[in-house]
Length: 115
Picture 1: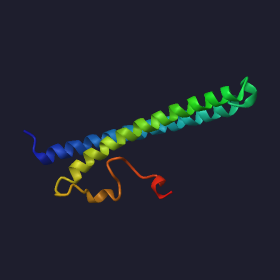
Picture 2: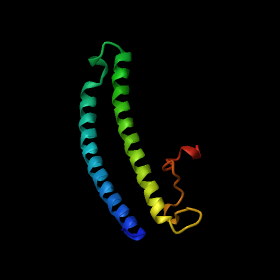
Picture 3: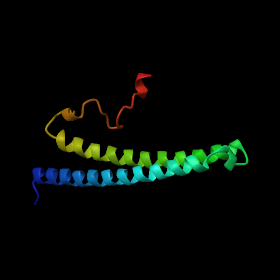
């Protein structure tokens, strides 16, 4: 039977592996995003479309794919955060997890609240 400490260590090792894989995904997505940017700069212009509405529709569809990818990675990171909070906050009664600063279970603040 695995001790609690061993289980926590295994969770942390798994989290580190997942984070490494996320970093690789983000690197690949950055390369892909650069290619999309180059393609969009050459193809998403007024001359390529019959109307401004069609141009806007194409731009929005590209944007939606990017937002969907970022949302997926954000959900994955929030899940990892919950696991780390459980491991690192396990010795505290309030479940605070001191090393996480002002983060909440909903993710990070990107400054929207301060507006």
